[in-house]
Image (tube, rainbow, N blue to C red; front, side):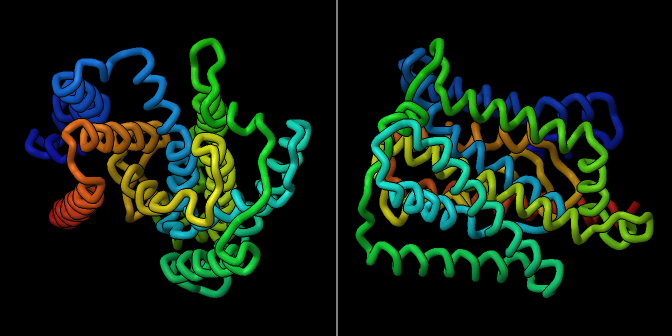
Amino acid sequence: MNAWTDILPPGSEIRSVAARFALPVTLLGLVLFATALQPAFLSIQNLQDILTQAAPLGIVVLGQTFVILVRGLDLSVASLMATVAVIATAFDATSDAAIPVIFLVCIAFGALVGLANGLLVTKRNVSPFLATLAMMIVLQGLRFYYTQGAPAGSLPTGFRYLGTGQLLGIPVNIIAFAILFGGLAFLLHQSPVGRRIYITGGNPFAAELVGIRSDRITVLCYVVCSTMAAIGGLFLVGFVGTVDIWVGRGYELDSIVAAVIGGVALSGGKGTLAGAATGAMILVVLFNIVIILGLPVQAQFVIKGIVIVAAAALIVRRNGAGRQH
């Protein structure tokens, strides 16, 4: 989404300012366009609904950003979201007192999945694509085996509040997203661990030379990603209100596209959580525009494809420019 800044003189003050504000300006432009199409778009109720819809994706995008920063990706996040939904209903609990236990179990399961992904990538040298694709299939098989294609069980009523409720007019899941964003942003942008993540993603070999255990950093990023996917899956269950074995379908692609829109480089080592979160909002607004225009839902896939191609072309262009200099 920053491609238009490339036409400005390299190193110029104008280009620097334009690049910094490209994402919020893009988001604002989309909001104004949606409002022109449907004035009710800016109503308090509609904005609350949009934020409620965006929160689960935003949570997953936070984790996906960590993995992309170390030159990886995680295709198993959507399958993990559906799996923790099945785990949550397996408790068949009716009391809200069970919610903390459900969260702890599901988060622990997500962390184990991330650990497995990270070890496959770092210790077995499996490509991130194949490792997480295999995990996606394994999790899908486990869900089918346990549920026989028809999940049963119930969730405490408090889950619905977590997914759709509001506190002082602010969606509860957005509050959860903000807390997670703050914690992860501090880890990534203000701590020594965050600096090691960027160095590892920028140049893994150089990271090893300066004493950074890049394998451990990479595994940590996969654990963070899967943990966020587990949490996002639980909030998505609360939002949807029902559970099936395909809850979260498409989030693996949506989270990658949102991060790319937000300026997280697929080549690793570049990007911010704020940019990725803004990218998630841009994607959600784009999907709402598709609905406003009355286009079929398949149009969303066209949008995602265009964004991926544009992002890939921009990366190639920038890499080529870097080699020339």
